[in-house]
Length: 365
Ligand SMILES: *Cc1c(COP(=O)(O)O)cnc(C)c1O
Image (cartoon, rainbow, N blue to C red; front, side, top):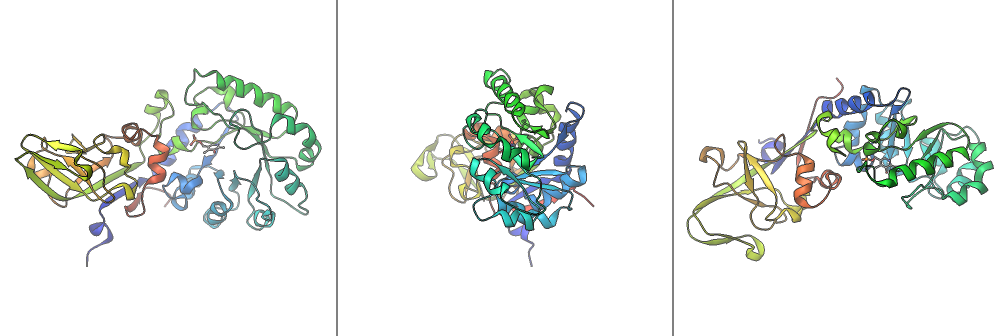
């Protein structure tokens, strides 16, 4: 019998030690007294929260941010009790009991959520107050804070948080404006810790660190700015298997829509991954793979299950059915691939498909 990796069209390798090393590297950059949490929402940006969160816990991380209640419920049995699981979306109507049962921390984003949580009786987990300072997405508006000051004081929130809109561009005046708005909101709210920075915010400097930073992207090897590049290890490798190699010696076209025309003698390799796997269609005639250190261009459109590369420049023994093209790896980071696709690394990671054969390296013993 074959193994699952023998049968898979592409192999996805996730380095848990690199994630832990990135967490430590970010934590070392923080101002004294600040702690580092981890955003593990969306299944740890597609990399598998069930493996990533325990690896981060082993590295010392004790606070984890999730988007939804069900993400946090799923993670609860996989990390020790002293790990705070913080739900960014907050309590939906009728769900306060789930927060109590699973000892989840709600982020309270709206006056309704503050009132809902204030009505909960008995011993309750800590909560987080989210104030909006410029995202206009979640969080209390400045004008809403006054009317809620008493309820919020009774809740004694563990943290007051806000979220930066432009943290990847240190020169954007939005950063200082949000920092000012956050400081003003904190003056009107009870004490407790404060948290403002995502990955990019960490690199804006000590003023942005407060008590807790909440990186996601940088843990997974995505660099919010040039300064972060040498600090971060790459986490993901993706190898696509060659199904067919074709020598071309007469003019012909490649793929749907016949968008690429071959005019010279050459060689094509067809790889078993496609847009159904999250190899984005925008990479058609734009993306690259790497074989034996040589960059090979995507030719033609990306199909649902197949990608065609022009491998004319690669020595023949390296391109044969069953061999691999590196789609993500040392020579091509997730950020590089995202740039070619016209998107951000976040979308590349969260699109990594279920057909890839996944293996994890490193992690807690
Ligand atoms: C996703 C998210 C983060 C992490 O952001 P990165 O840019 O991935 O570091 C932090 N805070 C909030 C509120 C988020 O939604």
